[in-house]
Length: 141
Image 1 (cartoon, rainbow, N blue to C red):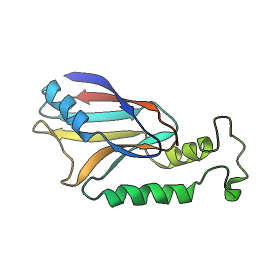
Image 2: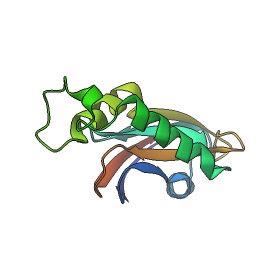
Image 3: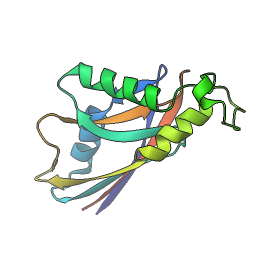
Image 4: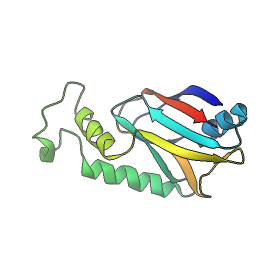
């Protein structure tokens, strides 16, 4: 059996947005006991992560690390960047997305995602302004 859906995720700017609950609801509605869920992000300036969902400081620290790794194109350290068509955060967002996944595969066991106790599914928005992002879900069971 195959089930598919597309989730829209509204972001408010850069940061990590957990949407595990929406994926769990999709799995429940599909009624699949065993299978493999694939999540695919339909964008090039954000990414997907499986990350700790217990301590919010983890998300803050991850975001801060990536901001230091690829700061805004306004930063003198980034003056070599050519692509600036959509603003100073655009090319750094593409760099961050190139270093992090845009797809995830998660086993479904006994009708549940096989995530660990402290794991959640996140959209990692790399742009400063709000966006409407889409994640395609494909469940094969």
